[in-house]
Length: 86
Image (spheres, rainbow, N blue to C red):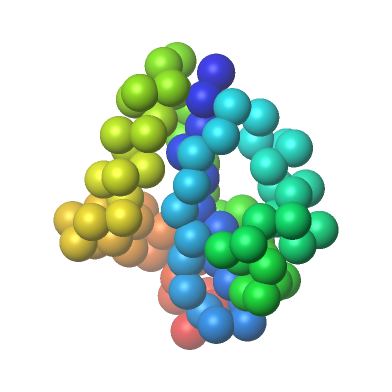
């Protein structure tokens, strides 16, 4: 299984989108500051993830979620969560 996930930075109030084969291990890396792109954006919260059977599908989904339309999709999908943090 491969996962596409979205983390919310409580420091800068922005999202980080990524993909991984082992979601728990990857989240631990983010929490420990082992990931360069999120090291200075901690604390982070997992706010969304999707499971894909194929790595290519997870990578494609990650790429989509980073586009304008993907961000719009996440905004609609996470409307309840986003209204809580505003």
